[in-house]
Image (cartoon, rainbow, N blue to C red):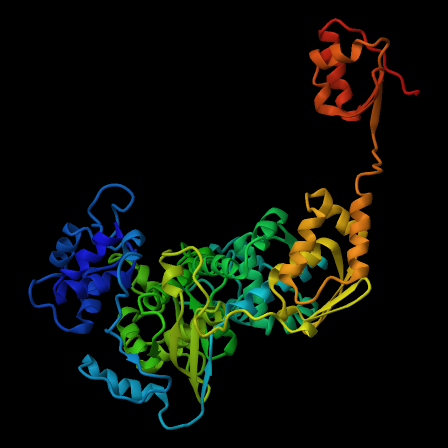
Length: 604
């Protein structure tokens, strides 16, 4: 029970609390070694009561705060760890450990911080520049943008960009199969005879954009940037709103369920998908910047592209676990956070998964594009180039877009951050966290956000709730779309399809009044009412069969011995009914089995 977990933590001494904190930060990693746990737990001082961390872990296990890697079953091969069901009941494990700044751009020195945290804070905060900028979190604009992208891609289906051509030489070299590559680099390795060298390191370029150039040019202004568009598309595929493969195809049932939820519920869904997705990584954008290169050894043939994606998703979770262990609503100095993260996450390569008997060289690793040198775990500048920029990319990108992080910049560099609801989402404490308190209570959008002209509706897409676009999608066609304006036109076939799907006129009118700041125009109101009044009065059916009975009792007998009721469309009279054509064979078989001899004819 959460209360029991909290009570158990309150009774811990400081050294056991440090080990518990370290286990939370290290997560469920079956390759965590005792020296790693000792290193992280020692970030706040030496452990002096016992000789090894296993003793502390055993005590925590006895209190019900960790699971042991020695237990049988699912976790039998793992190191000791804190499972999510316990982690979500713990208080913020980094509260008071990483000091909260009194306000953005705080220059106040930190007291009693090991490893000279205060000096590191001053170095990373850019004190005295006077170029501070604060960006507050608001989840609604991003959620509305996601809905706009869904609508636009559904209206204009587009093929995906084709994958890279496969090199012929991969047929005989397994280490090339499935990997993207730099053509010139591969050709050079082949011509120099080094293609089979065990020391050959090949560049792994960032994946090409999923959408073609024309679609990127059309949708990037709506998304906000090319990078945001790629993230949104990847997020929607991972969420199941788009089906995988080309062309881009909506999954109607998933889309409908997604759009039925309000904006904060949609934000919660998207955030949880982001936490787990593997086909997008912040590293790809860093590689596109040109300061880093990702290298791999093709001689290590066991490493597959999907392994790399899983490794990068693991590193994202390393970051998210630490950020979700910070208290909500408190400004945190990035330099303070980074000082801890250098201890928790010293290496950004495949060696994290190496066993003691594995290769001495990581199967993939990062190098400086400028020097060509492999990044060194002990070098602070190298750590900032890779892990530091990776963490900043996560915070200023997805977490800020999703309305989970306030940002403070100094001369364009992120120096402080404040989180809202990240821990609740990451640890699954609540289903749908509230919007940040800094976001004013939702005000009705300005009347100018929606204008109408008889059967045409023009809207500022980001100024109305996402569910309003879903409403328009049920009664109108999208005729024009720019970053600043969507134009819908009332459409009879679209409205008819919505009526067929169960939409009632009263529900439609109520949704308009609830979601939009303007009254429904009389022309639209009257037209919808007229369509509803006429709905179902006349129906045209195709591929039907007429059954004629010779007396007044045959119809009742046929209903008793066949599944006629299931296929019946209309009873014209006691002697004449209409059924669907595909039911004829089944009905004849049932009648013959019951002893009847029906006659079939193509003439009426």
